[in-house]
Image 1 (cartoon, rainbow, N blue to C red):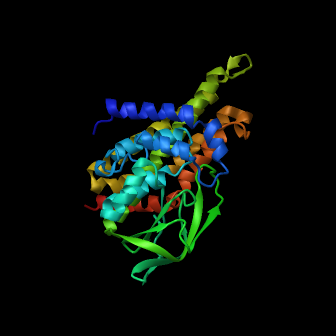
Image 2 (cartoon, rainbow, N blue to C red):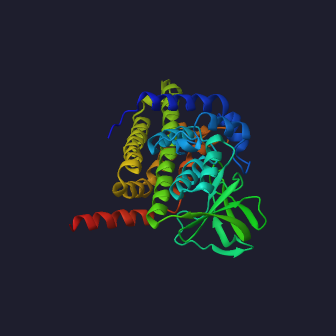
Image 3 (cartoon, helix red, strand yellow):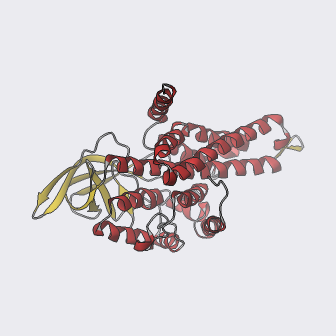
Amino acid sequence: MNLELDDEQVALRDTLRRFLVERASISGHVRPMLDDPTGTTEAVWRSLAELGATGVLVPAEFGGAGMTMVEAGIVAEELGAALHPGPWLSTAVAGARALTRVGGQPAAGILAGIADGTSKVAVAGLGEQSQKSLVSTRNGGFCVCSPPLAVPDAEAADVLLVWDGTELFAVESAAAGVSVTPERGIDPTRKQFRVELDNASAQRLGTLSADDLQAVTDDLLIAAAADALGAASAVMHTAIEYAKTRTQFGAPIGSFQAIQHLCVDMFETVELARSGVIHALWAAENSPQERHLAALRAKAFAGRLATVGDTAIQVFGGIGYTWEHDAHLYLKRLLSWSAFLGSSDCYLTEVGAHLAKKGKR
């Protein structure tokens, strides 16, 4: 496993980083989008598509970049560092991976739209214990009924992907019978919704095996972990730079042992998380046996990254608690990662079960 980025990957990272600074900064884009239910503008989304960010996982035959989860992780880390609020995880990872695995002509059309920026996708019910949709036929087509389902980025989406067991259906978000209700969470950069379907017209895309469905969920968890890594790394570096320049008692606060310990704790946490994310991104493409356990580990210890945001605010002191400072936005992003697709407890339990089973061999 090569831990170094190649020239193409470095170019992808640097190009995206420059775009986010110039066109989608925290002050110029993220904060204005905090109360916007879509989390993005058409101009920014189309620009991300032109850079290849939305189609990074879309196969080349559908107009995408045809890259791997390693490149998707690079994009996710940069978006996390910039606190990007758009529906990238839902569209470019969950949607693209599900549609690629299901295959077929209907999925191909949506994939092409993801790649060129004309379609945004939200996926219903990933990570839930059971799929509660009910599909029936009507006038030769399909319609879907469901109780309220958790669907991140539903307001931004043009297409909702809905599961009925292992059957995948596409529902246009503007179709009759689609009800979208916003849910207020701790992180305003993550747009959460509940979607209820009442005989909404649907298009059957195909069938995924249980293993395929698990793989889509694993890939989403791994990409979200890379996003959280980017956020934690960014707020850590900002806090360290602050400690170098902020003075108290005639000296930089970074010269005080207490502050040094806080900075070391943040660095240790970020770098340990980085190794886990790098391995998970590699396993997502190269080792199906390791992919699931790597995703579980990333999520099981998610709370450790959240401590980086908390520690950074301690370094910043009083100013870190103000609305004007970005530290609280980073902390909220990391806290939302801790709650993403459930708390860490069940993931820790599954990791422990894997270790116990391995120990008995």
